[in-house]
Amino acid sequence: MRIQHRLEDNRRGSFFIMDKERQIAELDYDLNNGVLNAYHTGVRPELEGQGIAGMLFDELVKYARDNNYKVIPTCSYILVKFRRNPEKYSDIWFRMDNEPSGTCCGVRPK
Image (tube, rainbow, N blue to C red; front, side, top):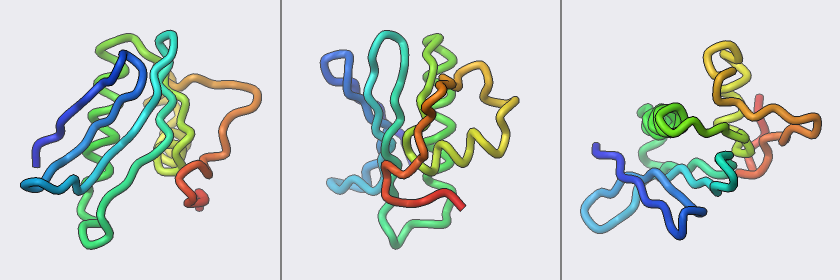
């Protein structure tokens, strides 16, 4: 699977995977002043549990580090990954007093 990246108007971005003409997974973000607001991760239901979201997450982390960006983990999946290993992501985690709850994707963290 090949992860592709698009960035529109230097503001809205997405890491995504296509299967022929159909998008099967995505991780969407907004970019503003060097801060990525990662607000959605999605994988087609029939492909869940295969590590695809993790591949997209790893690509986001690499992209943020390569570009010296910080990440706001608004998406529940990304927030859980950050909270499980805070020291691993402390260099890119944009911490705030009113930190997102991770409920933007509609999935509540466990």
